[in-house]
Image (cartoon, rainbow, N blue to C red; front, side, top):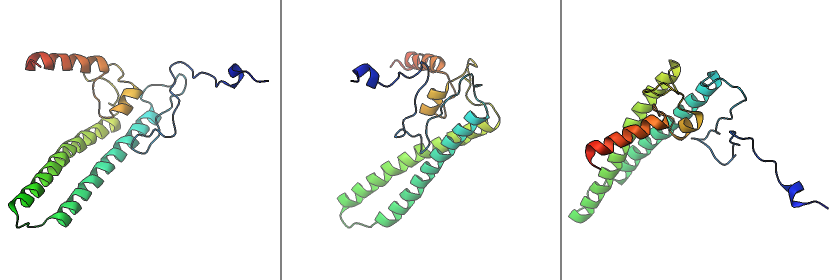
Length: 160
């Protein structure tokens, strides 16, 4: 006779995050840290380089889809309301692509930091940003504490 305790899976070790096969970062699995592993070693830098390149590739594919979509959908509607609707849709799409263009630039700058071995450390205080934060936001250049302080300062300056 087996008890519920015997069937229970062993608890995950503290500080370890078990990767879930369904969770991916731009098609890549989360990084699994090894015990006593040095922070931002070659394996970790390579992992983030792959994430950044995959993310950049996805954004570039989206740009190509937009160009194709706008070429295919462009029509000279005789009705002014239809023309205005199409122009508004294109305008929204172009604004989104502009934000993505800026993000691609940020990804490129981050890839340079990875290559120059200057990735993963806070620009303000110099501490480790952390693997999980970088996986959530691969272009992060501030630790959580410094980012929080920046946001508080910004709210105070803008009155928001």
